Image (tube, rainbow, N blue to C red; front, side, top):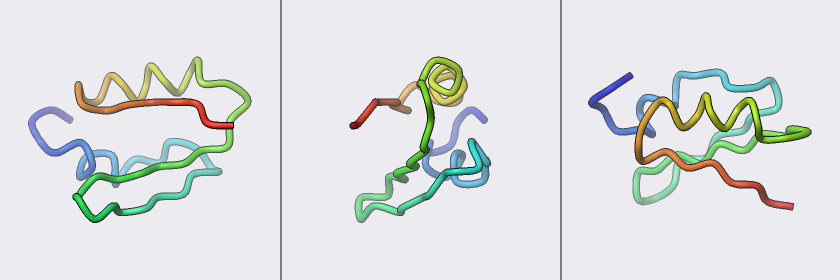
Length: 58
């Protein structure tokens, strides 16, 4: 998954059963997951592209 825009690459990945995806006006893709923690999924997300970000919101 190297070389493309991270939103295009992430679009086809099923990260978690709870996920929702929103296409943002600037071309980014917002993926929301309902998780108990960010430990396992954070590494998986960040390894796909250097511009990917993972954050916790309460």
